[in-house]
Every structure is written in structure tokens, then in C-alpha cells.
Image (tube, rainbow, N blue to C red; front, top):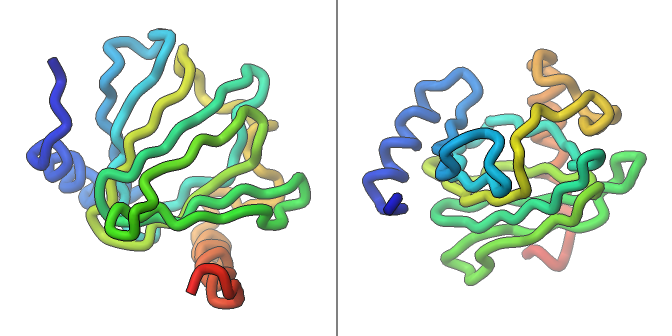
Length: 162
């Protein structure tokens, strides 16, 4: 039995803090070709998960927040925000399910944030057409910082999140 406990969250979080990408996952599936991929993803503020979709192959993706908080976004094909949701266990909002083909991304709001993620396997790196063409490349550090700030500030103008 693999157990999700404070020790696992803390160990994975410490690895995330040491990672240049400010995130680290711990897989529960034994092999990348397992039919269901399950993992925890420890993330720190300023990590960048480029908006993407899971299309061809189609894969739904589920997120459950274990600690910390994130803003989860969905986008239209032009990069306009369609929906957003703050996942925060202290606020009683624990997760979301994203359908295959829907552009999505997130911004980490708190240090020591950990999500549980599940999606159909086998694992395959995303093909270029699954990365949002209107979002910055991860290597473009300055544009990434601006983009994260833009997404974060989008909440300031949204009356339903205050």
C-alpha cells in the first residue's frame, strides 16, 4: 500500500523547492504505461505549468488539492479565460475535473502546495499542438513572469472571487 501522508507531502515539497522548475511529482503508478496515471504534484509559487490540453490522445484530468491553494483556469482557443476556480481545502473547494481537449493551466498561490492528479495512461509527453500557442514558452523567463502575473491579476477584476 502506498500512503499519502504528511511525510510524503513534506518530502516531495522539499524536492520541489530544490528543483529549478519549483515543482516535483511523486508517481503512484508503477510504470509510465499503466492505464491510469496517479501522482502528487508539489508546487511552489512562480512555478510555470504552461497552459495545455490533452487531445489526441484524449484524456480527462482530475485535480484534488491536498494542501495550499491554486487557481485553475480554462481557456478558449484564443487564450481568453473561460472559467477559473480557486482550489483551497480551507475554503471547502477540493478539486476539479477537466475534460479532454479543454485548454487549462494553473497558478500556485501558496508555498507548500500539493495536488493529487489522475488521468488516463499511458504517460506520453505532450505533443506541440497540445501546448497553448498563445502562452509563453517555459524558457522565456520574463514573459512567463508577466503571464503568471497577468493570470493572477485577472482575479482582481473578478467580483465573484472576492
